[in-house]
Length: 300
Image (cartoon, rainbow, N blue to C red; front, side, top):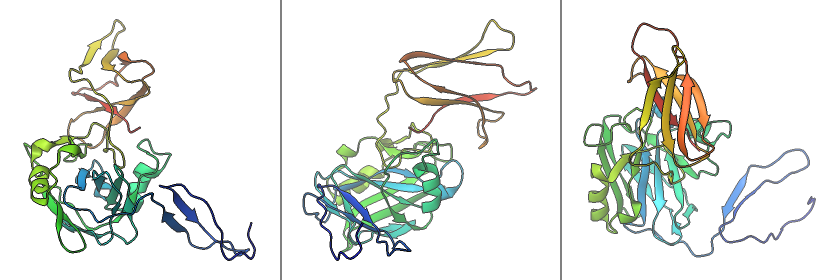
């Protein structure tokens, strides 16, 4: 409690993120934030930043769109004056820094993004996602392109994609985002990075529903994963079987009369406790038409 102090010394460790408010006895001031780094931040060059994930046509409202950047340089980077241009426009605020291997996200709508990914009551919550801000414009559902340039207009990143084959199809409105397969292999030149990121074979559908903004998806999914469906000995009962090599993963079994429908009905949740074969049994509702089932891995 400080009533008359004009300054206060607080020891902080490198990498600390400090947030503070002042109290005048009746009201709190606006929030002030500062980040402290062990090394001086430098201006990024080609290959230092890559677009590691983007959601251009999310399942649900377009307000959930995002672009994720990854610092692959091995040093602290200053984002002062960097600009996204093309389908969306965004000028990075002064004072923004990125540590090595840090991820940062630019979003379509900050409030919508927070409700899905930063609210601990959401099943897609992930802590401490760094959001640089909200862009103007919108990413087209039919394909788009944009560039990232430094304060002098030098090209750092160029990304261009389409919504049809050979591009990953589930990212086009079916619940996945586009994820870069291997950020470490992006060429360390503006031209090389542009050629790399414009190639559909360098991208994949995200394995997590609604993507994984703010973190790298490290979940191991076996290449030979098989999902089985069969009737049990009990009349009308169905059993879903699948394998999972990791405990602590949450799955949702859902059904729909159409595989392309945006509306799916939740039938059952399952959290894996042990690796190996997993089973779900249920009695489907009575109906006269076909039914599709999907097993969805929920956000961690």
